[in-house]
Image 1 (cartoon, rainbow, N blue to C red):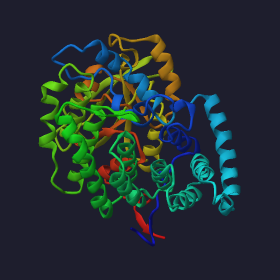
Image 2 (image 1 turned 90 degrees about the vertical axis):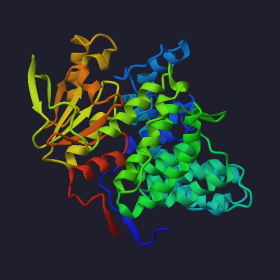
Image 3 (image 1 turned 180 degrees about the vertical axis):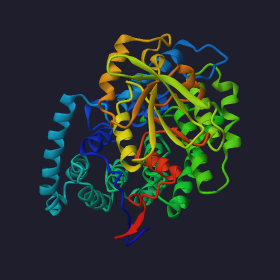
Length: 447
C-alpha cells in the first residue's frame, strides 16, 4: 500500500474518452455492451485484420467468420467509438449521474438497510465519474457481512481506482477476486485494466505489475499450451488476447531488467492446435512485434503518398537518421486522433507520421480508392497539423507487423525502440519512456 504519494499525470482522459472507457468496462450498464464480454472488455482479442503472417491451414467457416468480424469488433471496443448523438446522450447521462451521485452519497447512512441501492449508488458514481465517491460507497458495501454482489462490487472498485489514477491501489481487490472466485474473463480484464494503468509509471511499481503478470500467466499459459482460450458462461477471452497479454508481460519484464519468458512464448503459435485458427496470425504478429524491439528496423525508409490539397504527393522518409515515430492507423481506429494528439503534446519536437494503406481500409487489393481517399482527407483534419498522414504500400504495414490499430513504432537511427498497440495511457507512457522524454508529468511526485 502506498501512503502520501501519488502519480501526477497529465495524460488524463478527456471526459468523453473517460465516459467511453466506462462504457467499455461497465458491462451490462449500457446497452452498447449487451454483446459478449469478449466484445465489451477485450478489444485486443479480435483487433487484428489481415495479418502479414501466413496461416498454413485454411480457416474453417467459424474461424473465418471470427476473423472477418475483427475490424468491427476492434472499432466497437475502442473508447472513441461514439456517434455525435452518442456523445450528447452520454454527456447528459454523465452530468446527471455525477450530480445525483454527489447528492445521494452525502447521506449514505440512509441506504444502510438496502444493499441493492447501496451497490447501485456505486454504479451511479462510477458512471458519473465521481470515482472518489464511488470508492467510498463501494468500500462501505463490501464491508457488509454478506454483500450479495460482492464480486461485481470488487470489479467496480477496481474501475474506481483506475478512474482515480491510482491503479496500484486496486491490488487488494484483485487479490480478493483471485482468492475468492474462479479466474474468468472479467477478472482477467480487471488485471489488464490495472496493468494498463501502471505501465510506464516507474520502477517502484514493477514488482506489483510483474506479480499481476505472473498471476495471469499461471492461468493463461497452460490454457494456451493446451490449445484453449478462457471461456465461461460470463464471457470469454480469446487465445489471441491471452497471448498478446503474455507478450506484454514479457515486455514489462524486459523493461524492468528481469528475466522474461519470450523464448517459451515462441513455442505456443507453433502448436498444431492453433493451425487453421483465426487466433494464429495475431499471435504471430504480437510475438514478432516484441522480437523487433532492440533490433535494426526491417526497412530503412518509408515511401508513400502524402495527402496534398488536391493531389497525392510522393514522399520518402528515412528511418536511419534521428528519431521517427510511426503511428499505424485505419479509418476504423477512432481512438487514433486523440492518441496522436497526446503524443504530440508530450513530444512536441518528435517527427510523427500517421501511416495507413489502401488495403487496410478496404480489405481488397492495395490500390487507390477514391472513397477511402475522401474519408482520409476528413480524418486528417482530426490530427495535429504537424503530423504527416502517409499512405504506404500494405507490404510496409505487414513488414512492421502492424495489425492492431492504432499502434506506435518508435525508431532511432534505424533501431526499433518500441512497437506496441497504442490502446491506453500506459502505452503512451511507454512510448514517452522509450523516447527518452524528460517530461515529469507522468512521474511519481510527492503530494
